[in-house]
Length: 392
Ligand SMILES: [Zn+2]
Image (cartoon, rainbow, N blue to C red; front, side, top):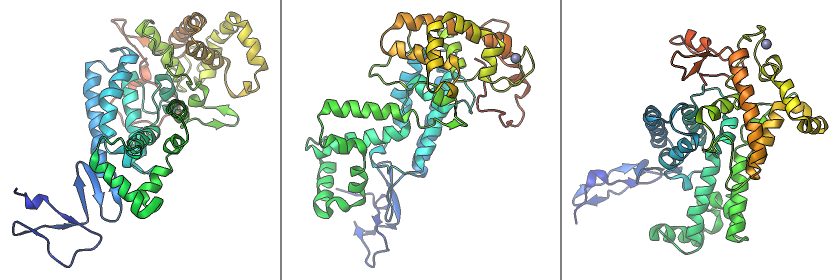
């Protein structure tokens, strides 16, 4: 057997006082090295740095390619886009994730990467509410993915059904020699799903993980002066095989898109109202267009319920109704959900055309806002509000 000596290395905290040789050549001493694509450091252990940054960049580049092939607002169906992301793009940045510590800074980069891809899927602007998109597309946070993948990897090792014999031996050696005090064992034992699985049946673990998954979509929810922000206004999914108006393939793609745009706040980004000149907030759009009044007339029972609702001051009535729609889809009352969907669709179109100032393209396929054309090519403008938009 021959070794490629320059590719070998000795990794240690301090430079060894002796020389290591293979085939007569000195094996170089290093502080850190990349092993099987994972960065290892003599003092810090497995680290996620430059190499992982490159992976995230690769996700964005591949996403740009997929976007040109149809992973955009006018291309594939939303459920197809989500599937493409989860099958081809997300795994690229999940390499080595079972070893990533819970507080790793790289997780932020991964959340940003995921957000960039979601914006490509929906053709929304960078500052569109991240949390709202996660909930509507039913995509969990990368923080949760880390926890889940770590649990799956170490649970398999712990249960003695190893898919990787070397990892199995190492994990049990770590546990045996240094007890539960090694940094890896400490990290794994603080994994909520891993801990939960020690005392529960696998179906219970599945339900628990599912709950954490949906909870992770609330990561970006916020409330200010008693008012929920865009993300917090959107209901968090709870069901296993979540059906939703935004993903159900039975709806016309363009209809689904305009409802989604309304929902993530892309039609209202504090531009001047085309009808009255006031800055367009979501509440203003509903009121000024007359669509909120129509909604009350359409759904008197829901309006009555809203009036009794203890958190009624924290969100607007249309959000309350749309959350009812999400509820209905999830509990398979799709007929009721469809009634709401059609009503919201009409309102969304009116708001887009009458209040938000969107203009239809000559071929009739796209809608865009003149403000977006005017700022094209100029340096990036600071958004006025949280809800900034691109053509729906
Ligand atoms: Zn107005």
